[in-house]
Image (cartoon, rainbow over all chains, first blue to last red; front, side):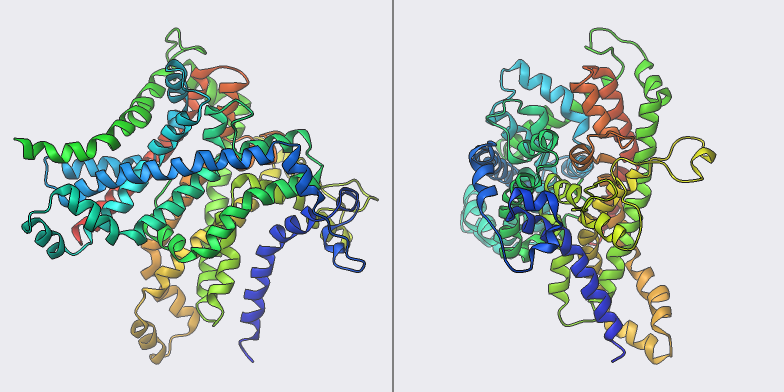
Length: 274
Length: 300
Protein backbone atom coordinates (compact mmCIF):
# COMPACT_ATOMS: atom_id res chain seq x y z
CA UNK A 1 0.00 0.00 0.00
CA UNK A 2 2.81 2.39 0.86
CA UNK A 3 4.21 1.77 -2.62
CA UNK A 4 1.17 3.30 -4.30
CA UNK A 5 2.69 6.81 -4.64
CA UNK A 6 5.78 5.26 -6.24
CA UNK A 7 3.68 3.50 -8.88
CA UNK A 8 1.62 6.64 -9.51
CA UNK A 9 4.73 8.74 -10.02
CA UNK A 10 6.36 6.26 -12.39
CA UNK A 11 3.24 5.60 -14.43
CA UNK A 12 2.55 9.34 -14.51
CA UNK A 13 6.02 10.17 -15.81
CA UNK A 14 5.89 7.38 -18.39
CA UNK A 15 2.51 8.56 -19.69
CA UNK A 16 3.69 12.18 -19.72
CA UNK A 17 6.69 11.15 -21.81
CA UNK A 18 4.59 9.20 -24.32
CA UNK A 19 1.84 11.78 -24.72
CA UNK A 20 3.53 14.19 -27.18
CA UNK A 21 4.43 11.41 -29.62
CA UNK A 22 1.01 9.85 -29.20
CA UNK A 23 -0.61 13.17 -30.11
CA UNK A 24 1.46 13.26 -33.27
CA UNK A 25 0.47 9.74 -34.23
CA UNK A 26 -3.23 10.41 -33.61
CA UNK A 27 -3.24 13.65 -35.59
CA UNK A 28 -1.57 12.03 -38.56
CA UNK A 29 -4.70 9.85 -38.99
CA UNK A 30 -7.24 12.69 -38.74
CA UNK A 31 -8.46 14.79 -41.64
CA UNK A 32 -7.23 18.35 -42.12
CA UNK A 33 -10.31 20.14 -40.83
CA UNK A 34 -10.51 18.04 -37.69
CA UNK A 35 -6.83 18.57 -36.87
CA UNK A 36 -7.06 22.31 -37.41
CA UNK A 37 -10.21 22.86 -35.37
CA UNK A 38 -10.16 20.45 -32.46
CA UNK A 39 -7.63 18.97 -30.10
CA UNK A 40 -6.31 15.53 -31.04
CA UNK A 41 -7.48 14.15 -27.69
CA UNK A 42 -11.09 14.70 -28.80
CA UNK A 43 -10.63 12.09 -31.55
CA UNK A 44 -11.31 9.21 -29.20
CA UNK A 45 -15.04 9.41 -29.15
CA UNK A 46 -17.67 8.03 -31.47
CA UNK A 47 -18.01 8.40 -34.34
CA UNK A 48 -14.39 7.47 -34.92
CA UNK A 49 -13.19 9.27 -38.00
CA UNK A 50 -9.66 8.28 -38.95
CA UNK A 51 -8.15 8.41 -42.42
CA UNK A 52 -5.02 7.38 -44.31
CA UNK A 53 -5.37 10.31 -46.69
CA UNK A 54 -2.61 12.40 -45.09
CA UNK A 55 -0.10 9.66 -45.73
CA UNK A 56 -1.17 9.33 -49.35
CA UNK A 57 -0.90 13.10 -49.77
CA UNK A 58 2.43 13.56 -48.13
CA UNK A 59 4.00 10.58 -49.89
CA UNK A 60 2.77 11.49 -53.36
CA UNK A 61 3.02 15.27 -53.35
CA UNK A 62 5.61 16.58 -51.03
CA UNK A 63 8.63 14.55 -52.11
CA UNK A 64 8.35 12.50 -48.94
CA UNK A 65 8.41 9.22 -50.86
CA UNK A 66 11.56 10.22 -52.67
CA UNK A 67 13.13 11.54 -49.47
CA UNK A 68 12.48 8.25 -47.75
CA UNK A 69 14.46 6.48 -50.48
CA UNK A 70 17.15 9.16 -50.25
CA UNK A 71 17.41 8.64 -46.50
CA UNK A 72 18.03 4.95 -47.17
CA UNK A 73 20.54 5.67 -49.93
CA UNK A 74 22.42 7.98 -47.56
CA UNK A 75 22.17 5.89 -44.39
CA UNK A 76 23.05 2.38 -45.55
CA UNK A 77 26.48 3.17 -47.04
CA UNK A 78 26.83 5.82 -44.34
CA UNK A 79 26.67 2.95 -41.84
CA UNK A 80 28.50 0.13 -43.60
CA UNK A 81 31.57 2.06 -44.81
CA UNK A 82 32.55 3.62 -41.46
CA UNK A 83 32.12 0.33 -39.62
CA UNK A 84 34.32 -1.52 -42.08
CA UNK A 85 37.01 1.17 -42.10
CA UNK A 86 36.89 1.54 -38.32
CA UNK A 87 37.13 -2.19 -37.69
CA UNK A 88 40.45 -2.41 -39.61
CA UNK A 89 41.88 0.38 -37.49
CA UNK A 90 40.41 -1.02 -34.29
CA UNK A 91 42.01 -4.40 -35.03
CA UNK A 92 45.40 -2.76 -35.38
CA UNK A 93 44.90 -0.78 -32.17
CA UNK A 94 43.77 -3.82 -30.22
CA UNK A 95 46.10 -6.57 -31.43
CA UNK A 96 49.17 -5.12 -33.12
CA UNK A 97 52.25 -3.54 -31.60
CA UNK A 98 53.60 -0.42 -33.19
CA UNK A 99 55.31 2.80 -32.15
CA UNK A 100 52.95 5.56 -31.07
CA UNK A 101 49.98 3.26 -30.66
CA UNK A 102 48.86 4.77 -27.40
CA UNK A 103 49.37 8.38 -28.47
CA UNK A 104 47.49 7.78 -31.69
CA UNK A 105 44.59 6.21 -29.86
CA UNK A 106 44.40 9.10 -27.41
CA UNK A 107 44.22 11.33 -30.46
CA UNK A 108 41.17 9.33 -31.60
CA UNK A 109 39.63 9.77 -28.14
CA UNK A 110 40.19 13.52 -28.39
CA UNK A 111 38.49 13.59 -31.78
CA UNK A 112 35.37 12.07 -30.19
CA UNK A 113 34.29 15.43 -28.86
CA UNK A 114 35.30 17.73 -31.73
CA UNK A 115 32.10 19.50 -32.86
CA UNK A 116 31.15 18.84 -36.46
CA UNK A 117 30.74 22.60 -36.92
CA UNK A 118 34.50 22.93 -36.74
CA UNK A 119 34.82 21.02 -40.04
CA UNK A 120 31.87 22.20 -42.11
CA UNK A 121 33.37 25.13 -44.00
CA UNK A 122 36.56 23.44 -45.24
CA UNK A 123 34.71 20.19 -45.98
CA UNK A 124 32.12 22.05 -48.06
CA UNK A 125 34.86 23.91 -49.93
CA UNK A 126 36.86 20.75 -50.50
CA UNK A 127 33.86 18.83 -51.80
CA UNK A 128 33.00 21.74 -54.08
CA UNK A 129 36.56 21.89 -55.40
CA UNK A 130 36.56 18.22 -56.34
CA UNK A 131 33.03 18.57 -57.81
CA UNK A 132 31.51 16.17 -55.30
CA UNK A 133 29.36 18.58 -53.29
CA UNK A 134 25.66 17.78 -53.61
CA UNK A 135 26.25 14.12 -54.47
CA UNK A 136 25.53 11.02 -52.43
CA UNK A 137 29.20 9.93 -52.34
CA UNK A 138 30.03 13.29 -50.76
CA UNK A 139 27.72 12.71 -47.83
CA UNK A 140 28.84 9.06 -47.50
CA UNK A 141 32.43 10.23 -47.17
CA UNK A 142 31.52 12.92 -44.66
CA UNK A 143 29.43 10.61 -42.48
CA UNK A 144 32.15 7.97 -42.64
CA UNK A 145 34.71 10.43 -41.32
CA UNK A 146 32.42 11.86 -38.64
CA UNK A 147 31.46 8.38 -37.43
CA UNK A 148 34.99 6.99 -37.33
CA UNK A 149 36.32 8.20 -33.96
CA UNK A 150 33.40 6.71 -32.06
CA UNK A 151 33.42 3.52 -34.13
CA UNK A 152 37.15 2.98 -33.65
CA UNK A 153 36.84 3.70 -29.95
CA UNK A 154 33.98 1.26 -29.39
CA UNK A 155 35.38 -1.55 -31.55
CA UNK A 156 38.92 -1.31 -30.22
CA UNK A 157 37.60 -1.70 -26.66
CA UNK A 158 35.54 -4.71 -27.69
CA UNK A 159 38.25 -6.36 -29.83
CA UNK A 160 40.77 -5.82 -27.05
CA UNK A 161 38.58 -7.76 -24.62
CA UNK A 162 38.47 -10.90 -26.78
CA UNK A 163 40.30 -13.89 -25.28
CA UNK A 164 44.00 -13.61 -26.02
CA UNK A 165 44.62 -17.40 -26.14
CA UNK A 166 42.12 -17.79 -28.94
CA UNK A 167 43.88 -15.31 -31.20
CA UNK A 168 47.34 -16.55 -30.26
CA UNK A 169 46.52 -20.14 -31.07
CA UNK A 170 45.12 -19.06 -34.42
CA UNK A 171 48.38 -17.25 -35.21
CA UNK A 172 50.37 -20.32 -34.06
CA UNK A 173 48.37 -22.40 -36.51
CA UNK A 174 49.72 -20.12 -39.21
CA UNK A 175 46.64 -17.97 -39.80
CA UNK A 176 47.30 -14.60 -41.41
CA UNK A 177 46.10 -11.28 -39.93
CA UNK A 178 43.52 -11.19 -42.66
CA UNK A 179 42.19 -14.60 -41.73
CA UNK A 180 42.18 -13.93 -37.99
CA UNK A 181 40.32 -10.66 -38.58
CA UNK A 182 37.61 -12.00 -40.88
CA UNK A 183 37.22 -15.53 -39.47
CA UNK A 184 37.70 -14.87 -35.78
CA UNK A 185 37.53 -11.27 -34.65
CA UNK A 186 34.56 -10.08 -36.71
CA UNK A 187 32.32 -13.11 -36.04
CA UNK A 188 33.07 -12.91 -32.30
CA UNK A 189 32.24 -9.20 -32.27
CA UNK A 190 28.72 -9.36 -33.68
CA UNK A 191 27.14 -7.79 -30.56
CA UNK A 192 29.48 -4.79 -30.70
CA UNK A 193 29.06 -4.47 -34.46
CA UNK A 194 25.28 -4.56 -34.02
CA UNK A 195 25.33 -1.82 -31.38
CA UNK A 196 27.56 0.28 -33.53
CA UNK A 197 25.48 -0.28 -36.66
CA UNK A 198 22.30 0.79 -34.88
CA UNK A 199 24.01 3.87 -33.51
CA UNK A 200 25.59 4.97 -36.73
CA UNK A 201 22.45 4.24 -38.73
CA UNK A 202 20.25 6.34 -36.44
CA UNK A 203 22.90 9.03 -36.31
CA UNK A 204 22.95 9.34 -40.11
CA UNK A 205 19.22 8.78 -40.57
CA UNK A 206 18.39 11.52 -38.06
CA UNK A 207 21.05 13.97 -39.21
CA UNK A 208 19.95 17.38 -40.46
CA UNK A 209 23.01 19.61 -40.31
CA UNK A 210 25.42 17.65 -42.51
CA UNK A 211 22.70 17.05 -45.11
CA UNK A 212 21.76 20.75 -45.14
CA UNK A 213 25.35 21.76 -45.74
CA UNK A 214 26.40 19.13 -48.26
CA UNK A 215 23.24 18.27 -50.23
CA UNK A 216 21.47 21.25 -51.72
CA UNK A 217 19.63 19.50 -54.57
CA UNK A 218 15.98 18.96 -53.41
CA UNK A 219 15.80 15.66 -55.30
CA UNK A 220 18.59 14.20 -53.16
CA UNK A 221 17.80 15.43 -49.68
CA UNK A 222 16.84 13.04 -46.86
CA UNK A 223 13.57 13.21 -44.93
CA UNK A 224 14.93 15.44 -42.19
CA UNK A 225 15.59 18.21 -44.71
CA UNK A 226 12.25 17.71 -46.48
CA UNK A 227 10.36 17.94 -43.18
CA UNK A 228 12.28 21.05 -42.24
CA UNK A 229 11.21 22.61 -45.54
CA UNK A 230 7.62 21.51 -44.96
CA UNK A 231 7.67 23.15 -41.54
CA UNK A 232 8.81 26.47 -42.97
CA UNK A 233 6.31 26.45 -45.87
CA UNK A 234 3.30 24.69 -44.30
CA UNK A 235 3.93 25.40 -40.63
CA UNK A 236 0.28 25.01 -39.61
CA UNK A 237 -0.82 22.17 -41.91
CA UNK A 238 -0.56 19.77 -39.04
CA UNK A 239 -2.12 16.80 -40.83
CA UNK A 240 0.80 16.89 -43.32
CA UNK A 241 3.54 17.64 -40.81
CA UNK A 242 2.46 14.96 -38.36
CA UNK A 243 2.25 12.22 -40.98
CA UNK A 244 5.57 13.28 -42.52
CA UNK A 245 7.23 13.24 -39.12
CA UNK A 246 5.78 9.84 -38.35
CA UNK A 247 7.06 8.39 -41.62
CA UNK A 248 10.55 9.53 -40.65
CA UNK A 249 10.17 8.01 -37.17
CA UNK A 250 8.94 4.60 -38.28
CA UNK A 251 12.24 2.97 -39.07
CA UNK A 252 14.03 4.25 -35.94
CA UNK A 253 11.14 3.03 -33.82
CA UNK A 254 11.15 -0.43 -35.39
CA UNK A 255 14.90 -0.64 -34.85
CA UNK A 256 14.50 0.58 -31.31
CA UNK A 257 11.87 -1.98 -30.35
CA UNK A 258 13.48 -4.89 -32.17
CA UNK A 259 17.05 -4.24 -31.06
CA UNK A 260 16.66 -2.30 -27.82
CA UNK A 261 19.25 -4.43 -26.04
CA UNK A 262 22.01 -3.59 -28.53
CA UNK A 263 20.95 0.03 -28.58
CA UNK A 264 21.29 0.34 -24.83
CA UNK A 265 24.59 -1.54 -24.92
CA UNK A 266 25.92 0.92 -27.49
CA UNK A 267 24.90 3.86 -25.32
CA UNK A 268 26.61 2.39 -22.28
CA UNK A 269 29.90 1.76 -24.05
CA UNK A 270 29.95 5.02 -25.89
CA UNK A 271 28.62 7.56 -23.46
CA UNK A 272 31.19 10.07 -24.65
CA UNK A 273 30.05 10.42 -28.25
CA UNK A 274 29.71 14.11 -29.09
CA UNK B 1 60.89 -4.37 -42.09
CA UNK B 2 57.74 -5.53 -43.82
CA UNK B 3 56.25 -6.62 -40.51
CA UNK B 4 56.61 -3.13 -39.08
CA UNK B 5 54.53 -1.65 -41.83
CA UNK B 6 51.58 -3.99 -41.42
CA UNK B 7 49.77 -2.09 -38.62
CA UNK B 8 49.93 1.10 -40.62
CA UNK B 9 48.30 -0.57 -43.60
CA UNK B 10 45.37 -1.53 -41.39
CA UNK B 11 45.19 2.00 -39.98
CA UNK B 12 45.59 3.77 -43.30
CA UNK B 13 41.96 3.94 -44.56
CA UNK B 14 40.66 5.30 -41.26
CA UNK B 15 43.38 7.88 -40.91
CA UNK B 16 43.01 9.03 -44.49
CA UNK B 17 39.39 9.89 -43.71
CA UNK B 18 40.34 11.46 -40.40
CA UNK B 19 43.09 13.54 -41.96
CA UNK B 20 40.98 14.84 -44.84
CA UNK B 21 37.63 15.34 -43.11
CA UNK B 22 38.60 16.10 -39.51
CA UNK B 23 42.19 17.21 -38.96
CA UNK B 24 42.71 19.38 -42.01
CA UNK B 25 39.26 21.05 -41.66
CA UNK B 26 39.83 21.89 -37.99
CA UNK B 27 43.14 23.58 -38.80
CA UNK B 28 41.65 25.31 -41.83
CA UNK B 29 38.65 26.58 -39.84
CA UNK B 30 41.07 28.12 -37.34
CA UNK B 31 42.82 29.90 -40.21
CA UNK B 32 39.54 31.01 -41.85
CA UNK B 33 38.38 32.52 -38.57
CA UNK B 34 41.12 35.16 -38.93
CA UNK B 35 40.07 36.02 -42.49
CA UNK B 36 37.37 38.14 -44.14
CA UNK B 37 33.97 36.95 -45.42
CA UNK B 38 35.22 35.14 -48.53
CA UNK B 39 38.60 34.20 -47.04
CA UNK B 40 40.59 36.42 -49.42
CA UNK B 41 42.48 38.42 -46.78
CA UNK B 42 43.55 38.17 -43.14
CA UNK B 43 41.80 40.61 -40.85
CA UNK B 44 43.26 39.65 -37.48
CA UNK B 45 40.85 39.30 -34.60
CA UNK B 46 38.02 41.29 -36.19
CA UNK B 47 35.65 38.31 -36.43
CA UNK B 48 36.12 37.49 -32.76
CA UNK B 49 35.66 41.12 -31.85
CA UNK B 50 32.42 41.10 -33.80
CA UNK B 51 31.18 37.90 -32.18
CA UNK B 52 31.73 39.18 -28.66
CA UNK B 53 30.35 42.70 -29.20
CA UNK B 54 27.42 42.18 -31.57
CA UNK B 55 24.11 41.90 -29.71
CA UNK B 56 22.79 38.98 -31.81
CA UNK B 57 25.87 36.87 -31.15
CA UNK B 58 25.95 37.87 -27.49
CA UNK B 59 22.38 36.70 -27.17
CA UNK B 60 23.29 33.39 -28.86
CA UNK B 61 26.19 32.89 -26.46
CA UNK B 62 23.90 33.61 -23.52
CA UNK B 63 21.36 31.11 -24.89
CA UNK B 64 24.04 28.45 -25.12
CA UNK B 65 24.94 29.09 -21.49
CA UNK B 66 21.26 28.78 -20.62
CA UNK B 67 21.10 25.49 -22.53
CA UNK B 68 24.27 24.30 -20.88
CA UNK B 69 23.05 24.94 -17.36
CA UNK B 70 19.36 24.06 -17.53
CA UNK B 71 19.44 21.24 -20.06
CA UNK B 72 22.30 19.44 -18.33
CA UNK B 73 20.99 19.83 -14.79
CA UNK B 74 17.40 18.91 -15.64
CA UNK B 75 18.25 15.90 -17.82
CA UNK B 76 20.76 14.51 -15.29
CA UNK B 77 18.47 15.23 -12.35
CA UNK B 78 15.36 13.73 -13.89
CA UNK B 79 17.32 10.82 -15.31
CA UNK B 80 18.73 10.06 -11.87
CA UNK B 81 15.37 10.29 -10.13
CA UNK B 82 13.71 8.05 -12.70
CA UNK B 83 16.59 5.57 -12.59
CA UNK B 84 16.33 5.30 -8.80
CA UNK B 85 12.54 4.98 -8.83
CA UNK B 86 12.28 2.47 -11.66
CA UNK B 87 14.91 0.32 -9.97
CA UNK B 88 12.29 -0.53 -7.37
CA UNK B 89 9.48 -1.85 -9.53
CA UNK B 90 8.77 -4.99 -11.56
CA UNK B 91 7.78 -3.29 -14.81
CA UNK B 92 11.08 -1.42 -14.86
CA UNK B 93 11.97 -2.12 -18.49
CA UNK B 94 8.55 -1.05 -19.73
CA UNK B 95 8.61 2.25 -17.86
CA UNK B 96 12.17 2.91 -18.99
CA UNK B 97 11.33 2.17 -22.62
CA UNK B 98 8.63 4.87 -22.54
CA UNK B 99 11.13 7.47 -21.40
CA UNK B 100 13.87 6.24 -23.65
CA UNK B 101 11.94 6.23 -26.95
CA UNK B 102 12.61 9.90 -27.83
CA UNK B 103 16.33 9.02 -28.07
CA UNK B 104 15.63 6.99 -31.22
CA UNK B 105 13.88 9.70 -33.23
CA UNK B 106 15.39 12.70 -34.96
CA UNK B 107 15.50 16.19 -33.51
CA UNK B 108 13.52 17.20 -36.58
CA UNK B 109 10.66 14.82 -35.73
CA UNK B 110 10.83 15.90 -32.09
CA UNK B 111 10.62 19.52 -33.21
CA UNK B 112 7.44 18.78 -35.19
CA UNK B 113 5.97 16.93 -32.21
CA UNK B 114 6.60 19.83 -29.89
CA UNK B 115 5.64 22.62 -32.28
CA UNK B 116 2.31 20.85 -32.27
CA UNK B 117 2.30 20.56 -28.46
CA UNK B 118 3.00 24.31 -28.19
CA UNK B 119 0.54 25.28 -30.98
CA UNK B 120 -1.08 28.61 -30.18
CA UNK B 121 -4.40 30.19 -31.12
CA UNK B 122 -5.64 33.53 -29.81
CA UNK B 123 -8.01 33.60 -26.90
CA UNK B 124 -11.55 32.51 -27.79
CA UNK B 125 -10.46 29.94 -30.39
CA UNK B 126 -10.22 26.21 -29.71
CA UNK B 127 -6.67 25.39 -28.67
CA UNK B 128 -5.30 22.43 -30.65
CA UNK B 129 -1.97 22.36 -28.82
CA UNK B 130 -2.07 20.31 -25.65
CA UNK B 131 -0.03 22.78 -23.57
CA UNK B 132 -2.32 25.72 -24.25
CA UNK B 133 -5.43 23.55 -24.01
CA UNK B 134 -4.34 22.47 -20.55
CA UNK B 135 -3.47 26.06 -19.63
CA UNK B 136 -6.74 27.57 -20.80
CA UNK B 137 -8.55 24.63 -19.21
CA UNK B 138 -7.49 25.89 -15.79
CA UNK B 139 -8.23 29.51 -16.69
CA UNK B 140 -4.87 30.80 -17.93
CA UNK B 141 -4.44 32.89 -21.04
CA UNK B 142 -3.08 31.08 -24.10
CA UNK B 143 0.63 31.72 -24.63
CA UNK B 144 2.63 31.65 -27.87
CA UNK B 145 5.34 29.60 -26.19
CA UNK B 146 7.89 29.75 -29.00
CA UNK B 147 7.46 33.47 -29.66
CA UNK B 148 6.92 35.31 -26.41
CA UNK B 149 10.07 36.02 -24.54
CA UNK B 150 9.39 38.70 -22.00
CA UNK B 151 9.61 37.82 -18.38
CA UNK B 152 6.90 39.77 -16.58
CA UNK B 153 8.09 42.37 -14.03
CA UNK B 154 11.77 41.41 -13.84
CA UNK B 155 12.63 41.98 -17.50
CA UNK B 156 13.83 45.56 -17.16
CA UNK B 157 15.97 44.66 -14.16
CA UNK B 158 18.16 42.28 -16.17
CA UNK B 159 21.42 43.52 -17.73
CA UNK B 160 20.46 41.95 -21.07
CA UNK B 161 17.23 40.44 -22.33
CA UNK B 162 16.54 36.89 -21.22
CA UNK B 163 14.39 35.22 -23.84
CA UNK B 164 12.06 32.93 -21.95
CA UNK B 165 10.93 31.07 -25.07
CA UNK B 166 14.30 29.33 -24.80
CA UNK B 167 12.88 27.46 -21.82
CA UNK B 168 10.23 25.96 -24.12
CA UNK B 169 13.00 24.70 -26.41
CA UNK B 170 15.15 23.42 -23.56
CA UNK B 171 12.17 21.43 -22.27
CA UNK B 172 12.10 19.58 -25.59
CA UNK B 173 15.81 18.84 -25.26
CA UNK B 174 15.19 17.46 -21.79
CA UNK B 175 12.34 15.33 -23.11
CA UNK B 176 14.73 13.80 -25.64
CA UNK B 177 17.82 13.27 -23.48
CA UNK B 178 16.49 12.30 -20.05
CA UNK B 179 16.25 8.72 -21.35
CA UNK B 180 19.95 8.73 -22.10
CA UNK B 181 20.85 9.90 -18.61
CA UNK B 182 18.43 7.40 -17.11
CA UNK B 183 19.85 4.42 -19.00
CA UNK B 184 23.48 5.15 -18.13
CA UNK B 185 22.74 6.04 -14.51
CA UNK B 186 20.50 3.01 -14.09
CA UNK B 187 23.35 0.76 -15.26
CA UNK B 188 25.58 2.54 -12.75
CA UNK B 189 23.07 1.94 -9.98
CA UNK B 190 22.93 -1.76 -10.79
CA UNK B 191 26.70 -1.89 -10.36
CA UNK B 192 26.50 -0.83 -6.72
CA UNK B 193 26.91 -3.97 -4.61
CA UNK B 194 23.72 -4.72 -2.68
CA UNK B 195 25.74 -5.66 0.44
CA UNK B 196 26.86 -2.06 0.85
CA UNK B 197 23.32 -0.76 0.79
CA UNK B 198 22.04 -3.61 2.97
CA UNK B 199 24.75 -3.02 5.56
CA UNK B 200 23.76 0.65 5.82
CA UNK B 201 20.12 -0.36 6.17
CA UNK B 202 20.99 -2.77 8.97
CA UNK B 203 22.88 0.04 10.71
CA UNK B 204 19.65 2.01 10.68
CA UNK B 205 20.28 4.48 7.86
CA UNK B 206 17.17 5.93 6.27
CA UNK B 207 16.54 5.58 2.52
CA UNK B 208 17.23 9.30 2.19
CA UNK B 209 20.61 8.97 3.93
CA UNK B 210 21.48 5.93 1.83
CA UNK B 211 20.82 7.92 -1.33
CA UNK B 212 22.87 10.99 -0.34
CA UNK B 213 25.68 9.28 1.59
CA UNK B 214 26.19 6.05 -0.33
CA UNK B 215 24.53 5.92 -3.73
CA UNK B 216 25.37 9.43 -4.88
CA UNK B 217 29.10 9.30 -4.03
CA UNK B 218 29.52 5.89 -5.67
CA UNK B 219 27.60 7.09 -8.70
CA UNK B 220 29.41 10.40 -9.13
CA UNK B 221 31.88 9.22 -11.83
CA UNK B 222 28.94 7.96 -13.89
CA UNK B 223 27.11 11.24 -13.37
CA UNK B 224 30.21 13.01 -14.64
CA UNK B 225 30.23 10.90 -17.80
CA UNK B 226 26.57 11.66 -18.45
CA UNK B 227 27.00 15.35 -17.72
CA UNK B 228 29.92 15.75 -20.11
CA UNK B 229 27.93 14.13 -22.92
CA UNK B 230 24.99 16.43 -22.24
CA UNK B 231 27.22 19.51 -22.08
CA UNK B 232 28.57 18.70 -25.53
CA UNK B 233 25.01 18.27 -26.78
CA UNK B 234 23.98 21.60 -25.27
CA UNK B 235 26.89 23.41 -26.88
CA UNK B 236 26.38 21.94 -30.34
CA UNK B 237 22.58 22.22 -30.33
CA UNK B 238 21.42 22.97 -33.87
CA UNK B 239 18.69 20.77 -35.40
CA UNK B 240 15.97 21.30 -32.88
CA UNK B 241 16.32 25.06 -32.64
CA UNK B 242 16.56 25.29 -36.41
CA UNK B 243 13.29 23.45 -37.01
CA UNK B 244 11.30 24.86 -34.10
CA UNK B 245 12.06 28.56 -34.43
CA UNK B 246 14.89 28.88 -36.98
CA UNK B 247 16.55 30.91 -34.25
CA UNK B 248 13.89 33.63 -34.45
CA UNK B 249 12.44 35.55 -31.51
CA UNK B 250 15.77 35.50 -29.69
CA UNK B 251 16.34 31.74 -29.67
CA UNK B 252 19.48 31.64 -31.80
CA UNK B 253 22.34 29.57 -30.44
CA UNK B 254 25.94 29.58 -31.66
CA UNK B 255 25.39 26.70 -34.09
CA UNK B 256 22.30 28.20 -35.75
CA UNK B 257 24.01 31.58 -35.99
CA UNK B 258 27.01 29.94 -37.61
CA UNK B 259 24.74 28.32 -40.20
CA UNK B 260 23.15 31.70 -40.94
CA UNK B 261 26.56 33.36 -41.29
CA UNK B 262 27.49 30.67 -43.82
CA UNK B 263 24.38 30.46 -45.96
CA UNK B 264 22.37 33.65 -45.36
CA UNK B 265 25.11 36.24 -44.94
CA UNK B 266 27.95 34.46 -46.73
CA UNK B 267 30.48 35.49 -44.09
CA UNK B 268 32.67 32.44 -43.66
CA UNK B 269 35.12 34.28 -41.41
CA UNK B 270 32.50 34.99 -38.77
CA UNK B 271 31.03 31.50 -39.16
CA UNK B 272 34.48 30.01 -38.56
CA UNK B 273 35.01 32.21 -35.50
CA UNK B 274 31.74 30.92 -34.05
CA UNK B 275 32.86 27.32 -34.67
CA UNK B 276 36.18 28.02 -32.96
CA UNK B 277 34.33 29.36 -29.93
CA UNK B 278 32.37 26.10 -29.78
CA UNK B 279 35.59 24.11 -29.93
CA UNK B 280 37.18 26.28 -27.26
CA UNK B 281 34.19 25.66 -25.00
CA UNK B 282 34.49 21.92 -25.57
CA UNK B 283 38.27 21.82 -25.03
CA UNK B 284 38.09 21.32 -21.24
CA UNK B 285 35.75 18.38 -21.83
CA UNK B 286 38.25 16.95 -24.28
CA UNK B 287 40.94 17.04 -21.59
CA UNK B 288 38.62 15.48 -19.03
CA UNK B 289 37.72 12.73 -21.48
CA UNK B 290 41.36 11.97 -22.22
CA UNK B 291 42.21 11.85 -18.54
CA UNK B 292 39.29 9.57 -17.78
CA UNK B 293 40.32 7.29 -20.65
CA UNK B 294 43.89 7.06 -19.36
CA UNK B 295 42.68 6.08 -15.91
CA UNK B 296 40.46 3.39 -17.40
CA UNK B 297 43.40 2.06 -19.41
CA UNK B 298 45.49 1.69 -16.29
CA UNK B 299 42.88 -0.54 -14.69
CA UNK B 300 42.34 -2.73 -17.75
